[in-house]
Amino acid sequence: MTELRHFQHGSLPEGFRQMLIEIHDEAYADAMDDPFNQRFPWFVDHWSGAEGFTCVVAYDGHEPVGFAYGAPATPGREWWRNTEYRPQNGYTSTYAVSELMVRPAWRKQGVSDLLHAELLKARTEDLAVLLVDVTHPKVQALYESWGYTKFGEQQPFADAPVLAVMVKDIRT
Image (cartoon, rainbow, N blue to C red; front, side, top):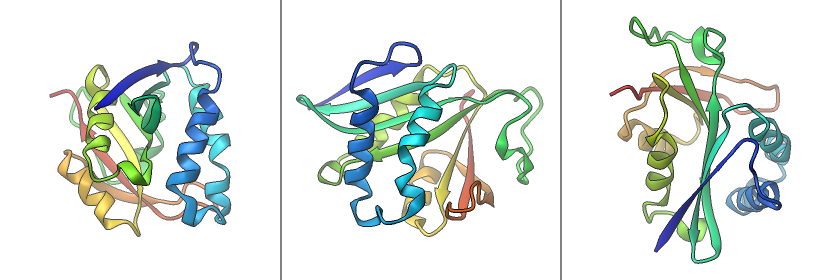
């Protein structure tokens, strides 16, 4: 049985950062020679230090098996606004889903669905936005099945892959 635990900025337990890094390193074991993947600890520090950061971690007993996290974007300064997406009137706030990953032994068991749904369940923003490596069409299709639409591509860092920008209305 999967248990979901919530964490947020300002009240992260000791060992939280290392737990996320260990899950990431196992999830990306075949790609850890990529400098972008090696920078994951920086991303953990960046996102977990953001005001409004929230994270959901799935556990199988005492074993953390996956997580999803993100934070609200600064209204009007969202990084995705240079895409072709134009939100409807009144859609001004965005929650950026930064990471969603599940350790290999727990994949294809619905854990990512649970994590994603739980992460967005109590959000009050209008939109959710995320990035997906364009060389992973199955992952993009999964997000599309959850209501996201691709509205462009970006390469946010010189060492990052080209990423699909995906947006979802979460007001409804």
